[in-house]
Length: 216
Image 1 (cartoon, rainbow, N blue to C red):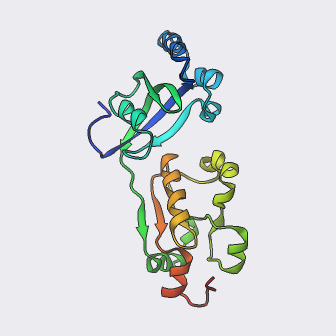
Image 2 (image 1 turned 120 degrees about the vertical axis):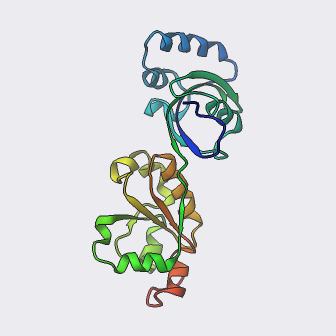
Image 3 (image 1 turned 60 degrees about the horizontal axis):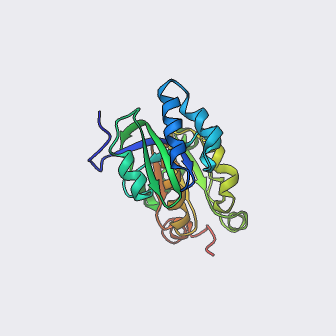
């Protein structure tokens, strides 16, 4: 199946990045991979991108969410193909590992969140991610939410698929809904299948649902 054309799919992409003056190296890597070498091992050994530590895995990319040249090349490939492209970062050897229907982020109103929080079994059916800072949580918090501060993204992001279940409904909260939307986009790129951003954040929740939650 060609992973191209429509705006209704996402691609799981691996790449090897080299400098702008080292394009010729990619031809050698591609030849070795064609002979049976593992793409991930080649990325780990040769890529200058931090993703090399993860076998060159970029994650799930969506239309309009990554560098245009890389996106255009990736969406022109079939799953399993290997090809080169150039971006401002350098030259890439990339492959499409898998594809899936486009996952969109749900925009959840505070009233919907309140219904979930007051229902039986909420913690079993959903996982709750709060990307605010510890001092914000100390001022105002909601039950079940675990803290993943966006300011410490580099610490928890590499392990997020180990800490959270990618198949489970994931609700993301911040103060006004901006940081949580950033985090929600990241979670989708990491393969999470059902992600909801709490629109207006805990501030709107306080105003519309529960005025006992302090406003700040």
